[in-house]
Image (cartoon, rainbow, N blue to C red; front, top):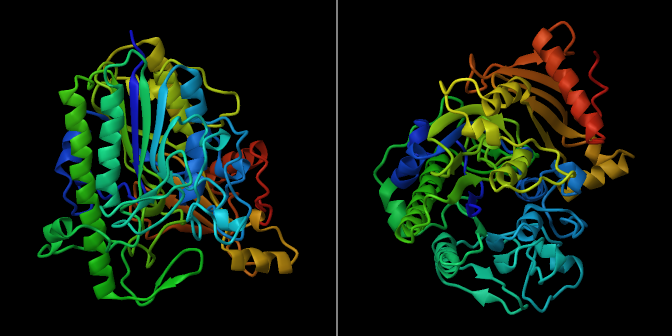
Length: 487
């Protein structure tokens, strides 16, 4: 049997709650809802580091963000990029016989303005042209850019530094390019893999075609139970966003409009796969890199441990091998690479730190005792997601350096199980005080009433999760200063 084709689609800053089939946010996604009914719906998928570049580094390598060196966004003023010597999913797929392609936002290369003030490619600020070679990590077809947030006037590079400028919503244009790639490969004996990275619904939220905004013009959007409408809103890293009720409502409507636009464009890909007879033996993954708080807990953006920030949609369809179902096991970013490789029949590199969830996806309730089912049950009992965030704003890094402190030892670390989220927060600035939180996500799904602890000892759940977190820190050589927490 031919190896399955792979189409991996991920949007930027699309939270798990913002899909119609989830019955949480009041967002219109009819095509995604239909796709969910045909897929394995992973209801507890999380982003191991809810920020663009760190998530992408973890996705590509199957390693946690900090060990890759990409602990914050690749930006001007910091020497941060995905190293060429990392073994990535594209490298393994190419070596395993796949035709490989990458379209859309990359955000894993060193911004060119770190090297020269006026790059020939035209890249500015955090953006970069990634030339052919090892920094593309096995992706042969390339239609991409580093990071650029003008969604209505995007640009791209292929195999030269000549910038390709486009006057079209980026999601629509990238979908058209993805369809061209698939059509060219559809009759080949060689399987293909395509990673398609849409930037919306990432901010600026208002940069959405009018036809999608019109869907929400007269709709009344209700705040989630944990939304605090205030002026200014906060970002967990210390930034503030001016606004209030009007800012919140317009942001929500524009954010939902972008997701409805994604829904329509996604439907085009699904229709094309059906038209070309590729549906049955193509693994289609629809997900995102992290969420968006959108006013929850009085905050916008991401980088916090709350479900609106870490929670991502994750839908996986492969009609030949996977039966539609809901999977409520915790699946982390680092688990994606080994899962895809196992499904494709390829070996996972020893560098990968995540765990394949392939058996969990294949197991059907009531299917009786079998080897895959037994392995899946063992995984369920042991499955935890480790999460992290590190101070990465240059102003914060400078303050830590001035205080003689390592910024990598601060921020927050967390461990997420099916029911609980245990958080140790050391803050984003040197004067921050250690805080410990335990959330019961079943009793308190909106995370409004965490148990605040001075130390985990004496609370059996917190103590157990604290030990698991410490083990993770040792295994990944994470310098996080957890010892301020007495046990």
